Every structure is written in C-alpha cells, then in structure tokens.
Length: 153
Image 1 (cartoon, rainbow, N blue to C red):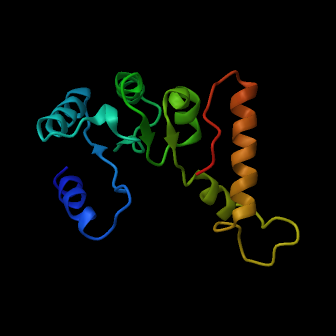
Image 2: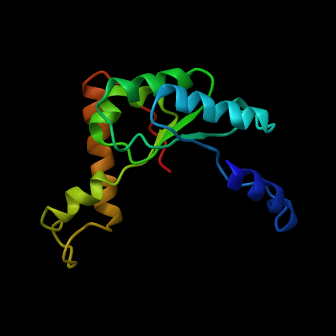
C-alpha cells in the first residue's frame, strides 16, 4: 500500500494524465483482505472509486472455497482484477471479476507444437496462440453458461 500511495503522490510531478497505478489487496484469509482494504480507506484511498482493484495472492489457491469467498466479498463494491487466474478459477468465479490475467496460455503453448506455419520453437510468446487460446476459453465459458467479461486488454 505504501508504494501505491507514494507513486500516486509522485505521478503528477512527472505526467499530467491520470495515474496508472492500481491498488492491490493482499492476504491469505478473508480477514487479511478486509484489513488491507481498511488500511487503504484509512489512508484516504476510496477503493470503490478506483478503476480496478487487484486481488493478490489468488493464483496459489484457485480452486478453494476461500478464494471464491474473497472474490464474492469484493465483487459488488469494487471492480476486482485477479492476478494469474487459471481456467478453473475463471470457471468458479470469473463472472465476478472485472478482469483477470493468466499465463496458462503460455504454459499450454510451451507444451504444444507450434501452430501450423510458425517457425519458432514454441508459441509461448505468440500473439496468435494467445488470441486463439483466449477465444477458445471464452467459447468454453459461454457454452458452460458462465458469464465472463470479454474485453481484451
């Protein structure tokens, strides 16, 4: 939180556009996340006014009930972003996230042969592979009746 506050203060001295820095709620238990949110509020940061608020530490426990509860807790009042959300996490609580990112596509690409016509060793850093993976995931989510935001980053 201290970095977010300091960078927010310094930003106007170097740029005249809105600050690109995003607050991150960290923790392990639901109480940890609530305490972290309270610290932001006590420092004068109204999280509900932020464009997005990152829910950190969810990548290590995607499939747990606790992660779903943390996302649900903040979904109504904030625009939460999930860091490194795996496909199982998206299936479980993706509809409650404003946005999410994932490296699952890159890992999948590393384990697969390159796309036809691609000369690189793997498509682990390939825009076409990432785009195809995303489209397939959205199709799977919609087929399963899951609502998910479809705006590309």
